[in-house]
Length: 378
Ligand SMILES: Cc1ncc(COP(=O)(O)O)c(C=O)c1O
Image 1 (tube, rainbow, N blue to C red):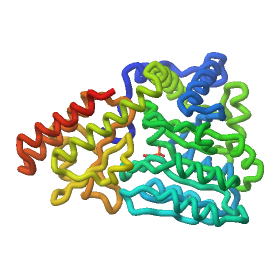
Image 2: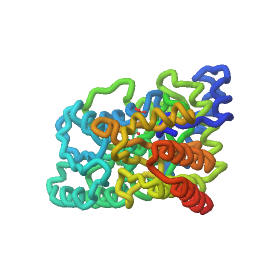
Image 3: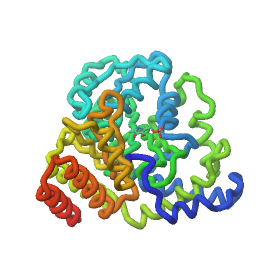
Image 4: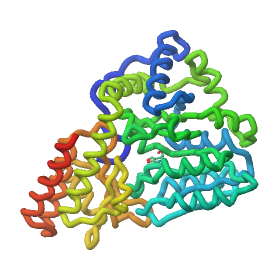
């Protein structure tokens, strides 16, 4: 129950175990054609969606180095570990970063983006870069509103990390006119780590013509050129593409609406059960990520608590990162997760709290009653 790598369905594991085929074969081209179509469906877009062999950070870096130039002014939203990563990547490539931050556990304020974008009369800001679902804190940022302000600016590109939001909640790329959207295979896609995806708008492709940052393996123009013939510029992780095909077919079968509502009810079951157990949510309750619930452990070492749950129940929970280590634990409910998993993890947490004398039997029972109520919702 960590927010990635997430559980992998049996069918997908079987697809992984097939013998690899030639990546220039007709059979593989057919696979690229069908996965690309399904990726566009998942992103709700007509834009190109490219598959890169590399983890999510490869897609994040590709988004920056293909659309921007040295010294470009960009806004980076930062309210957690992955927002910090954006700032690091941007600075590594010599971009001039204006940081909009907020305390970890709270969302970015869209009005701060609006103000800076409105004041930019010279249109010096070339991109607004942010994380949609901040995995380190369990916060979801208001991408819909922020992207509407980016559109009003009319020049800046939106470059967004949707690594733990895509395949968990609504990310309508065309409707919100998102220019660059990065995601990774080991999350909502339900396949192992190793592939990342990047959706590129027409405006983003136009920006590639001016971009002067160094790139070779991650030069997206090569990927676009190959995609015309359903191919890849280099040898892709063929078996992960087998798995991707299977996973996307499963997602199509379930349907976007059902996938989103499953994640939403798991989020509600988890967060409300946590409150029934007298624990506090780390993230602001108005902006809980559909994929991860971060829980404070006041008066208790979160690392010890995680260890107990792992040893006693064989359930792996995620810890806090950086200054949050020992202070919070995180429950991932992203991808191939069902109601039974949620009930089981809540029971394991309750049982461990009971052992520690932190809650009563009645409170443990109440948490399950509350969770079951949310799990029954459609
Ligand atoms: C929000 C977010 N962004 C980016 C990444 C980085 O992805 P990767 O570790 O696949 O490079 C992760 C991975 O946990 C993530 O959760």
